[in-house]
Image (tube, rainbow, N blue to C red; front, side):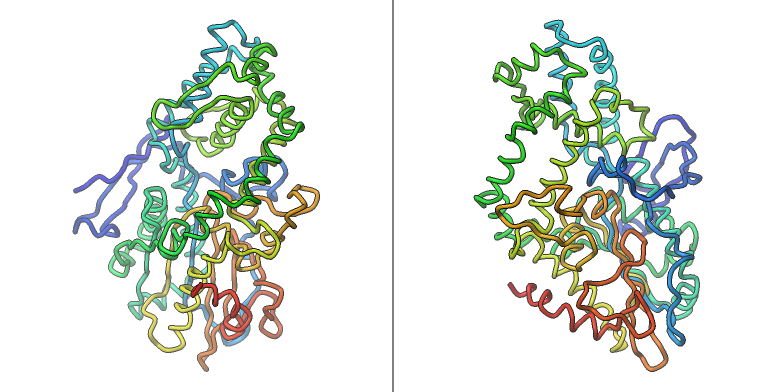
Length: 484
């Protein structure tokens, strides 16, 4: 029996985390252990995604946006025949050992110089615990919350589709599991599949071994991503925007304000004057400015929201609220220009998402030809995929671009990373068919019924159901991007 991973969250008894032969690495059921604080009883439902929650940006923990029992009923004669599901990995720790390391080095320097505020003296203990928690978890790995986000999502999928499940089992239709190949996407797939098997053990015989699908689920780093890579590395418009965002007097003032709760003004002034340079011990990241220090500390703040089972964190106590809001805006702006709608008239940040759209549409079309052996296709990926996919689909709030001469702001654009791609962000297509073979698609975004783009016309008498032929028509231009 091969143990693939140990997920650790302090303070409770271990429970079995069945990963089974879904891995295709053993004929026996592989097991890993999770220690958690009664995770199975955790409820992730919450109030509408408010301003405080949105400060976490793309690190915001997942909450479903609508209860499935309130969904629009399918038209008469149509029954569910398939689910297409694509989700971002769940909540995680820091992706690499730099922001925690650099923040601790900075704090230790200030301590040595007796340049900490009374409040700041309390931060060191929390920084050390935070670093230890991430090292124990494994940098970039799912947290206990991240595991549970996908387990609960799997449970809700089964709750809303009992008839599909029963019919699929009777017809021996299979379940496909795909991921990007990155560890946190793999673990998200396994957490999701584990819960399916716990609730419906018969699915074990119908579950394909997980497969890597980089072209559709990691396209920003796969063949054909050269234009996007060039945009990120050398586009002069992007470079200018990022400079304006970080070097503006307001940004510099807010960065200083964020640090002022922890560090005395003389120390911040020396940092601003370039007197310090800190190098991360395990990679090439550096901290050499006030903005570097503020962004590193803010990174710990947002990541702490993903580690609620790994420790008790009060990092918000060390930051001035208005400065936190501004740092959240900077984080949103970076995501908007680097992965989101970006500049008006351009598609370089999202054109590759057409690969994923084509894959999903082709899978649905195969039903009509009687060539689809799957009742569920489950995909697990990253924000670098979910953000451009939402833009390409035309999801409300995910599409508005900005002229090159106008800087993205909260006042002129509704785009927010927390709304477009929080942790475990997902797009699900529920596929329905009638006796004549006609196919309808209902889209869910974070489990809320969501319209396709405005030029797509819903099926008569419905708000959220669309004929497959209508989707193929209204996304014709987007699908052309696959060949570009």
